[in-house]
Image (cartoon, rainbow, N blue to C red; front, side):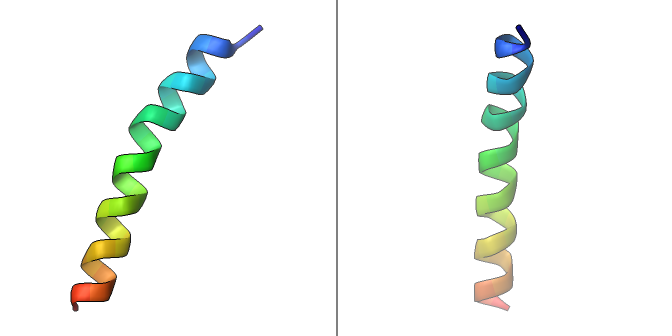
Length: 27
C-alpha cells in the first residue's frame, strides 16, 4: 500500500493548490 506516499503527496499538494488559487484570485 502506498498510503505514506499518497498522504505525502496530498499534504504537499493541498498548500500548493491553495496558494495557486489565491494567486489567481488576487491577480
